[in-house]
Length: 303
Ligand SMILES: Cc1cc2nc3c(=O)[nH]c(=O)nc-3n(C[C@H](O)[C@H](O)[C@H](O)COP(=O)(O)OP(=O)(O)OC[C@H]3O[C@@H](n4cnc5c(N)ncnc54)[C@H](O)[C@@H]3O)c2cc1C
Image (cartoon, rainbow, N blue to C red; front, side, top):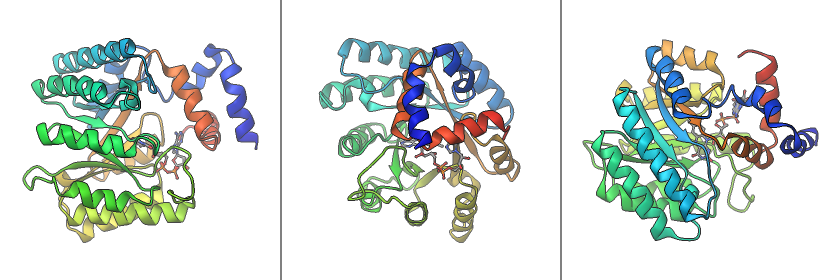
């Protein structure tokens, strides 16, 4: 209740105030801010994935502006020798209203990524996007198998079956790259697991399948116990260190991140930047009020 109230109030608070606790989770407003953060992380042996903030646009002009921003970011990342990939949300490119436009717009970004030897990850959004985002991924993957990755959300009951479908495209010498996360959106209990233990069980079930099929899992979670269980699965499958990676969000549980890095596992940090940070923060908070507590705790207690 209190979380919901806080989430409701936040959009009415001054941006400067929200920025005080948002900046811990966002690299900054422009590319130079992102470069600084990525370089610091790269120097610590940590890889990154850069995300330009902005989603749910149905304005083609704006979508084209974001396409240009992604292409410029890719080019500048190459000039700066950043050890990074890129993540993007297809609703930024009008996914729900015009699939073909969205596909063509993202395809141009992927072509640029290919040119500079980078990978583009198609983020997974709410369940009205799942089929479309899987279709988008399939089309792009068939053309650029080495440069696109997808996300699977463990809270969706369909996820194992989706994995079985996409597994068919797997190229043995270059395994399909799948980010496995719990899922952030509010979904109906008809289609999604709601209890933490059910979500975690499905997470491990999906990871087991990914490892058994020799695909590449990018394990995206800050859940300490779940990470330990994932590591047990990894050793059960005897997966080599370059056959999986962990991923975390920028600013979240840095101590846990460092522990995993010090144990010798590959870690990639999701680094969002952009002018649309306020919308992103308030939208996330409204969608998922329980993270308000995490954010406030994170602000008060240094991880
Ligand atoms: C790299 C990455 C990419 C992602 N991409 C997607 C995607 O494409 N689609 C999608 O639906 N979801 C995505 N997510 C979000 C994910 O689905 C979860 O909602 C989120 O990571 C929280 O779940 P958790 O696994 O960390 O476990 P939880 O049990 O929710 O969290 C474990 C602990 O981590 C800390 N924590 C977690 N999240 C936060 C936060 N935001 N702020 C502060 N502390 C926090 C808290 O201490 C919490 O107790 C991504 C997550 C990561 C790490």
